[in-house]
Length: 575
Image (cartoon, one colour):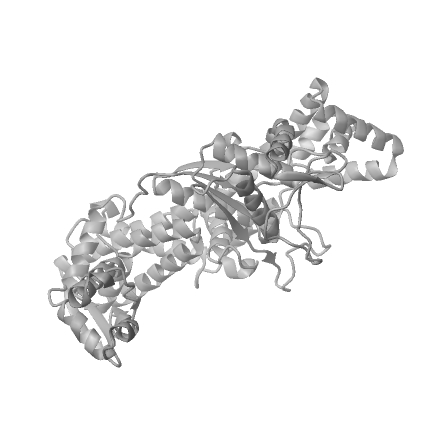
């Protein structure tokens, strides 16, 4: 089965070559969905100027070459080609899709190694809502690439190194390891940090001990490293609770924090300086990638080593990009990071290319993450102005979902299971349905609604189909009858589903999960119309009609469930 738009593009290009010569084979037929037919091709208008012929004349010539096309082609207006596919062709392609385990989704050949840097919470503080979008979007991209056959290497670039760890380790020693571990595992990282900071600012003795501890940490002192591991292990166990609740695929094996690159930083600086890519400027080692200037029109430096000999984010990011290209053999690297880091990553990529560490054969891309806003249009925070803890936000979503389904008669265990799925779907789908680089308003009331473009509405669509099959006394996988499209609602749904395979390829290539959400929402909307206009099990429906409608329901269910799984959205069997 093939996306109709792809089929039409190929057929119209062949018609262009036959009608006007092979030099026009690669012309874009400009095919778009149309309200007057299934699709409209506008190529005749753009081609007419080059051919010095009237647009309608060009359109008629193209139409003549499409005489064997499975459908009708009409010329309208100044030279539009209105194309309507035969119902039988759509039905046959839908049947092939139903029989295909991959629903028409291809694989990338040759496959690529794709490194995806996402989530990356700061180990010195609590995971907050700012980590939600990078975690959800990054995980969806990982799922999409793996579905297309790519090798995905997840990189959770934890903030697990640096000067704050001196005071954190000293605070851990003062309150005792057992107490510290209990706090960190309970998600009180921010409170732990604030207590350490208060001591650092108010106790000169503590400040001196913390500074000495930074030195022993950086030198690899065994006792200090043991305490660092105590802190990090407890923190990661809490992060894993959040990841498990969110249903993301990150594991401990994916952790590649700042500490991992610590041993590489000196060599990174030496190699950049030796190659001439980096130079000393006012005591600091800097790369001046071409094309970057400050407000004073002077070249903008990417500081690789500070004048005091310390390292910063740029040092680690340069070491990381070389490691990912050289050691991980990446073909493509996706940095799923906040949009406010756009300049930094453009400079890192440019510096890596200048140094020869990022060859033209490897793509490095910043998948920019827009800010989450509150209903007041400002950065999403608590009433006291603090960042909202991610675990608290997720639990509130589950609680809201539980309240919405409380009167549906489920036993406690079932209600808890459904409430979790609905809560996570509400949060994740709301995030993914918006372009990742756009800001969006976090509104739980809207997110948990069972209507509109929401996660719960998508779940309801799948539950509705499963309910049909329960009433029919059969499993969806057993609905293998021929698909026949006799009603407009059946035809519209069948035609739409054929675009699934090509859409997945485009969404993956462009890092655009919001487009998959839009496709699934349209699927659910067309299903709703089908449900209202085309009874499946109602008394009086002919057995043959019942069978082919069940087959269409089974195909729709698989598309919805596959799409939602690629987004990381859970799908309960009942709602």
